[in-house]
Length: 130
Image 1 (cartoon, rainbow, N blue to C red):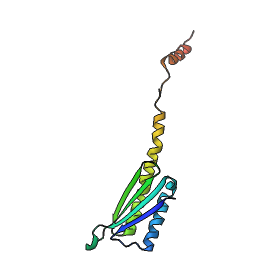
Image 2: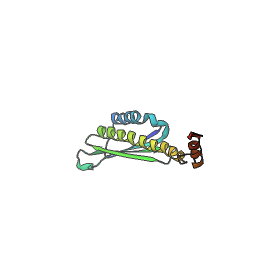
Image 3: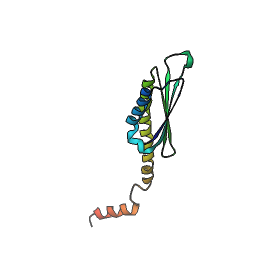
Image 4: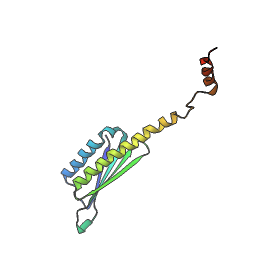
């Protein structure tokens, strides 16, 4: 299981919000848990002390290879921003891992697709009546 680092600025993180973040991350990236080393969740109030409805959730996932995935979502409600960001994280991690798996397959196909000319001409000669 990966480690979760939760950071917030200008947003108070209640126990319920913390549990929501852990639950949503577990639900969205459970199938990739063995490929993720660490997840950093940052919550911020964009408008700061002026007030306003904008809460931003930015999630950074460090994968077992060289890739790092960053997603973010903004909403009036912190819970909704976390839910949107975790859904985006699931999509992006799946896409990165699918591309990683597809690269070696493309390298294997680099060979001649057709048989050599002398093999093809032998087959033609065999079909002609003698």
